[in-house]
Picture 1: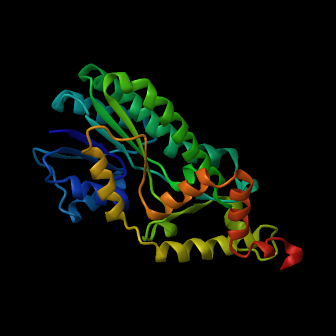
Picture 2: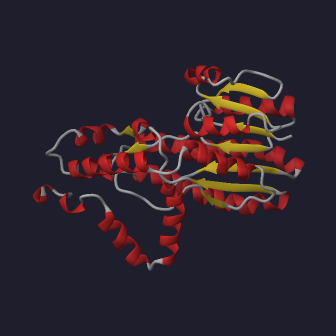
Picture 3: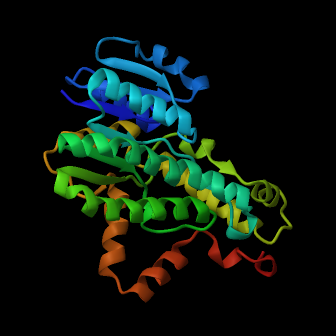
Length: 289
């Protein structure tokens, strides 16, 4: 019986993963921010001998420590950490302030690394453990208006790869789950930076076309995507239950496709193809509109 901690578990991929793991013989610690805890009751997640529901703002150091210490006290520690909580800020590079950049990194990079750091001593003592960091296709390639999101996921990928080698001697695995586009309402929860939101609503702004065309493209492709939170959750559960999970697990068809393109195409051709595939790219400057 494994003790599994899941962050951001009250909605979307986190909730789908928690539902699949529930009843499979594992002990679950499902977490979300305080204001989102009510969603667990809606989905029949109540406290039992094998399910614990806890508030966790992943950017709060005290809450992170409290959850991990409780697991160590009552269940001898955490066997599997699933760092699912994340946030996406959208803006072109010029429209991101330092405060917004740090806010993005706090959730997507710093928080999962701090949680990993907290669970590792116990995993090393027991000489086993699994850390699954939910990354993204945005961690292997970048798109316009998504620079700081991709930067946070690139950072997560780099740190996770180094950690993979560092803790392997203790039989601890580190895995990056890499979903691409998922058919969900996730695009509606994306946060725009202050300057980005202003430029997006002003047709005469220099970057208006970037936002306009990318908004339409992202909405269309997410609505048409084959992958769902449930299908990606199945990939996560299979990875949790694998004896030796790999470092990277592409979790959707497009993730496999982009990974293949990145490694098979010459770099110059790869970037040429992606640039010329951008929606309406010929009209991305004022004088072309």
